[in-house]
Image (cartoon, rainbow, N blue to C red; front, top):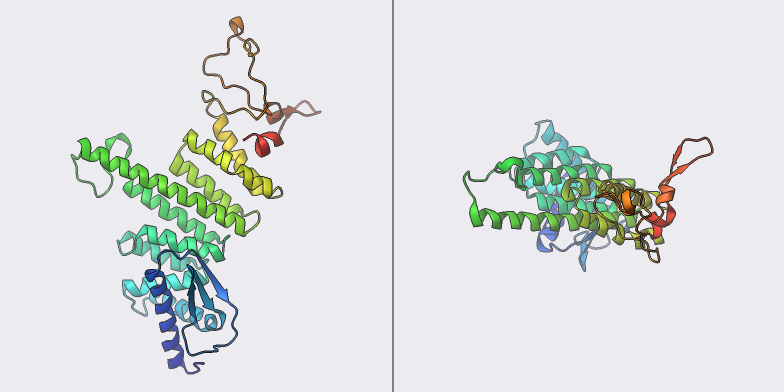
Length: 325
């Protein structure tokens, strides 16, 4: 094993290069982890790639992490110059080992803003970090920043304004085609974010950070899209049925219900076996329901239930959260 300072530098530089080369050669890597190996047994790279899984032998971390941490701090203190490629590689290595080091994420923000880093690649790095550190708050915070950056620079602007980088006066079929591609891209990003959140929630019980991020994504990428809300309510039902003590998952379903209840003109599916609504039971002249009124949800009686003191006790029916969809 390397012992002198020069040998350690050579070792960690090689490991940093091996990690980033592995990510470049195989863009389908979907998980990272440590391989418990107290000592270097063979004269070979401690980076192992098997079936889209990237492993780092644990013996090298005690050399690797202090090295990349020190290099980045020297750069931030303007005591050591690093070019853009070196910054990308060093921050990538550092964040895979310690994703809560906010300085590294801030450096990547600067690289992204100057065009030296692709936002999709940055989201990919965050996804990998979350496979080992699924609750990392700094990773979730940075992920929202990147998504907001994508929305700000690529989404159509309100009032017909052109997004940044667009040529003025563009329109017609070309603009329509561009809008279609943007919509497809946002839909793809939305789907990817839902999967990242689901994976992180499965790796760490009651992962509040993952579920909160999922709510944020719906608020900013779906923006009240009722089909997406219905799909989410249906798709999370099997998950909560298998994680009955995970309060974060039920809190997410409460959010979905509140969003759907805020759209009174949109009927929600009734629970299986619920009787059809009776005409004349909704009040109003001639037994007709008021225009735009929402049909009752299963368990509506439990959404607002009087308590013994005469006030209002806000509860959500278990049948709605758990089995209504």
